[in-house]
Image 1 (tube, rainbow, N blue to C red):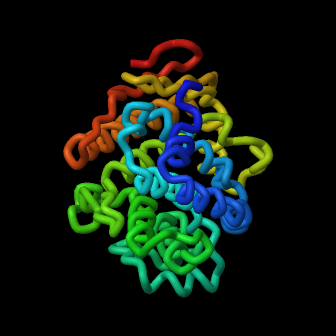
Image 2: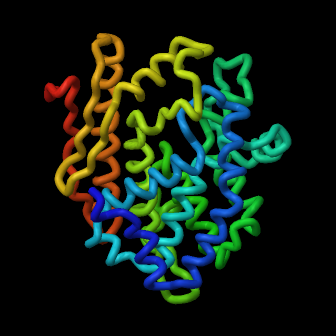
Length: 295
């Protein structure tokens, strides 16, 4: 949907060139920080700035021109920063891990787990580690205010399984000193859906991993599943997912994934309709495997 390319960035520049410059300048430090995920997760799908750019593109397509034109500059800025920073916790160092862990509520994660590796904990709670990282290094990104920092942290955390109906964690309107408000549940829902949709083959570039060399069978299946998904197209009323595979196991995995994406779409659309002034128009994930529609 080329007509939606760069809408968020363009609209932010139109509304507030200074805030757009803050965003643009923050991009200079991000490639090195985002690429650190490969130290802990060398076999994972892409979590670099290329993934972040894809998430911005999906946000553009999900919202479209009408919604984007109704967002204020601060909302556009927070969403862009969230798109780029949501996975930054995947690349924390051992020292940062030890510093951030006491700040995170792990719930019952450790129950029944005698040995939990740093890699496993970071993977399970990377959105929380991203929030901690953003708070600690906020000066790197020259954020305009403490309120912007709060919004970016929460929208970033919201891309995973936190409750976007929690009114304390995600107030419908976060007020800024400049008079603008930020619709946090809406931004978090859009970011979550965009991130979930980034599963097609172009995320599995051979620049990021060797698909013939995996440490676990689970990782092999994950990567082959992504390789089989050739296209994800977003239309105003639906999202089309196309895959090509002759492997029954991969086929089954893709069908399961389509079901998960439908649940994510339903949840995010519900959050948006009940907790914001907006509506998501996409209603269904339509899956085709080998050009055959899967019901």
